[in-house]
Image (cartoon, rainbow over the protein chains, first blue to last red):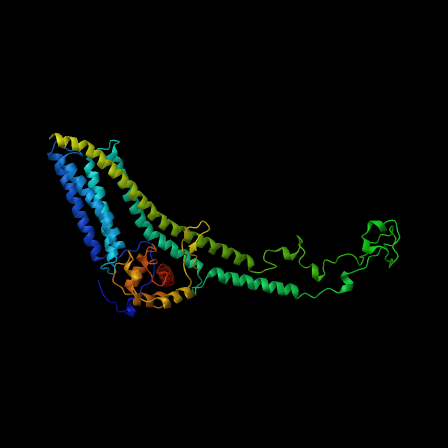
Length: 330
Length: 107
């Protein structure tokens, strides 16, 4: 373990692989000790079952396995929790060693308590406690796998949500969209306003006096008729009142045949940016989900600790009720 | 972008990644007390906070810092002990993204 690090330009690191693994001397030592203890327990189990007629959970060997397994479980639970909460003698990197010991002791506890059962899986308190222990160990193993995979997934999603310069991509896309909107609105405003004579025409009908006059709004009544008008006269010529589809102000009127109905015609690039925005939003949702998975998996592990503790206490009380009378009569 | 604080249900929401300028600001605000590193269960090497801060934002990444960045499992244990309320977790995520991008650039 180096106390200070002198950076050397040649040891520049790149890449973030899914299953990165760089073994350390401490890790190897811990794994070796765990395997030796585990192997010792299994060897004793094999020897005992071959040479003793009393191979049961309540035999001497059974109690030895139970006591050792419980001690390992206690070490696993207490040492790491204490180290994490302790504010004394803290050294950078020591908490990681405690976490690894936590895993080693937990695996040892599981193996020794499994050996304590001597293959006896009757539906009793001890079996339920063992199932709790198995569930706890599995949740721990899955948790460690998640610790490796979830941050890598989060980094992938964060990469999608950041620009190459490390800025917020949502903001960048929003600015581009805003620019498109401004550009288009300027184009709309830039259209030449239609001349008044083209659009505003006076009513050809005199509303004064006639039989229909009472049906028109009040302000039109009693106004003179500018041009003579005959109801029977129909012309196919364009009248001043008809709308010209070519006029500038009707450029944005939807029409199936219009070129404007082509996707992106009004706002070139807007759809692509919107799709990009949705992609970033989804990436951020996934990032949030992975973070919740990491957080809640820990809570599940702690919950399983409590359940296993409860089942173990139940089993201990049950075992004590059986054992104490026997010991008292001896 | 950081989205921390309370959600609409009153529960503490998870924080998302931070942008480059936000990370730079946090690095400048770091007082180098080492509390985040002491609380970290993923760090297995005695790297110092100044080395980590120097290599986090830009420039080459040394082997111990890269190893630490890859090992960080975003548990958030480093956030609570910070006396100035910084998010080392978000800084580590920035480092992870840098490593990820550098790997792609290399390949």
